[in-house]
Amino acid sequence: MSPTLVHVGIRASDLDTTIRFWRDGLGIPVVATRDGSFDLSDGYHNFRIFQHSGPARPPHVSGMLDYLHIGVRVNDLEAAASRLLDMGYEIFSDGLAGKIPLDVNSIEEGAFKVEDPDGITVDITSSHDQWPGVELGQ
Picture 1 (cartoon, rainbow, N blue to C red):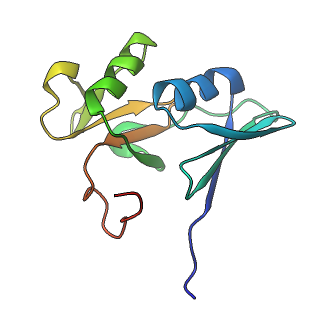
Picture 2 (picture 1 turned 90 degrees about the vertical axis):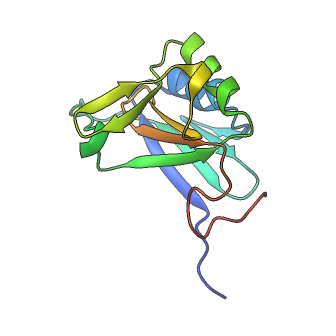
Picture 3 (picture 1 turned 180 degrees about the vertical axis):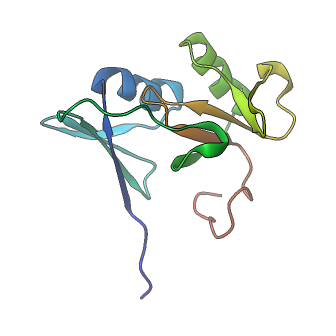
């Protein structure tokens, strides 16, 4: 049997704000809570968000220079973008010159980017062929 990616974890500066982003903005359900963490899941992968409790973190590098980004597929791209805009998040695409703001009503490429409360870039798509090898839930 080959290895299977089943878990990703991040530490949030503000756990409540971060949970609202992932749960309410992107629609990923919370399936369990533990002291200082929430487990979200699409039914295939566990995504655990912990409360960061260490020393102050340096600013996150984002845009074309980011060293971490997370991809999420949603059923309705425009609805997800609208929810995130209503929550105060910027919808954009990346260009060599930096962030390019997108109009939620004319997302032409079938994808957009948004930063979570800690500045982690999240690549949002509704396409089933955005990332090679991903065939679950089609």
